Length: 168
Image (cartoon, rainbow, N blue to C red):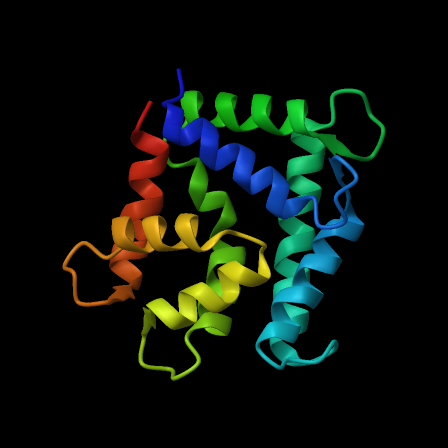
């Protein structure tokens, strides 16, 4: 059984992935998401980071589509997405690791000063591109920043993602 927080996060994730707002997630949404996030950081379509993020999102999206699209209409509905993430979380607390290529590409994009950590401003910039509210961004950053040094290390981010899956 998912916690209320996990349910809210899954709903927020679906809204983020449904980039065009049509109530379903398709390959087009992953491309639009990569375009929007990269544009926020000044990376043009076709740039190396844009290609890396687009490829990672499309690969992850194809895997998710194969697992989630129960009605075989080449799209993931909110209900299909929620059911898949509930099942994944219950069956495998480390399921977040399937997103590693996406996380790696986003980390490279967010770490604009290349210091190996993500500042609140760096994190906020990419999350705003995903369409998240300031409240959600600030709450999530605070939960990740365990040592309260106002930056998130890769270890903190990994621990946060790991603990999300483990909170059944």
